[in-house]
Image (cartoon, rainbow, N blue to C red; front, top):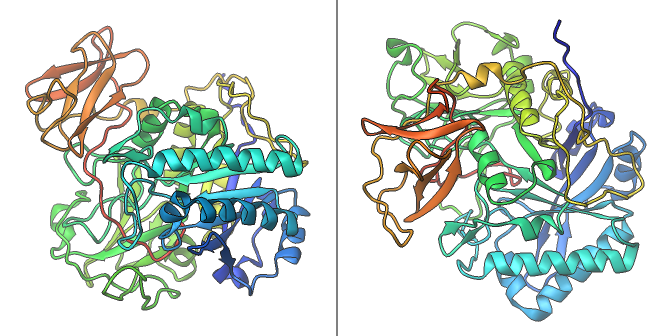
Length: 509
């Protein structure tokens, strides 16, 4: 008889200060870390946090439930000046000092830095330096770790980061080695959502476990893990990003005429999302509008879903096997909603655990419905991997990271391992000997039939990825496949293509 061994994962939740009234019913005991969002940096290295949030009382309430409390700095619309701050010697020093002082004054357990796109713009008005952002960020983090050690003692305060699904960019391409960052950062929180949305021509999944080859943006939950671990980031210091919300768009077609196809033409009209959605102004964009966001709790309490897997008419729920996500369609209004539910979260949990990740990150803590999603995260299978980075969490609170060397008799990702093979529309033709390439999204095996490594063309440069353990990359009829070494078809565990230029109504993402 198979036995599922569960472990206690790291569970990080973002506490949006502008939604503090909605956190009243949140069970903080189900989280190991709470990040108070957001401190917004000024050009001189100071930063401002929402003054309406009573920090001492909030910290006391959360810590009484056993969770650590960190201040999150930056976010989608709060990172516009970080690049220039780190390049200015005085502002850089002020920024570091102000972080240390803020953590000390408010008795916090550390800082979560949400500069999500070093070397890239992210939000359109963000300042960035393609060549120097990533090196400057590393130097700053090294200095901050030393400053924390000097003020509080070695390992007494945490440094964490929210990060994009590809490693930090340098000169327009993702970094191939981020191992030095991992020496000074405790956890990197992967933002594995907002992958498809209203900014694209076709509908698609907000947070796919795997992407469907040739359909939608060729990023996924799985490819993000592969990208970061492939660049030297230890799996035991990664948390998997879980979206407790979905996104709505308006299609230009009746999706029921091609039932089961998640990728259909959409307009640029973003419909109103749930009852909290309203006109909002993006500080970087010229056009105001709705976000189209549906918090999971409102899909449930507004009756869109009568239970986690049943939609109320006229909505039609469909499960997509390729991406392991559900989606909804209203044929009367042509509203499409991609979201996560307990079934899709469970698939992500099992995959992340099989990869040895420390746990999960949640955006955001107030979006769940009666803990349906959060309780699913706590069904975290024990991982057989350990964290050998030498980083320890000595902040004084219990931290069950799940990085124990427990074993399970269960094949934790059997469904995922039977997914369709990864396939590229064309193979190899645009890759040059100097590492450049001309066709974004094109893929080629590194050593056809002899290695599990393959290359993907990203912004004119080749990025090395890998198929799953025990498989080899093979090319056939203009496609690449990840096959078991004995010839049996196996699963590719991610790939990449061109980035979507997303916008977000929530600064964390």
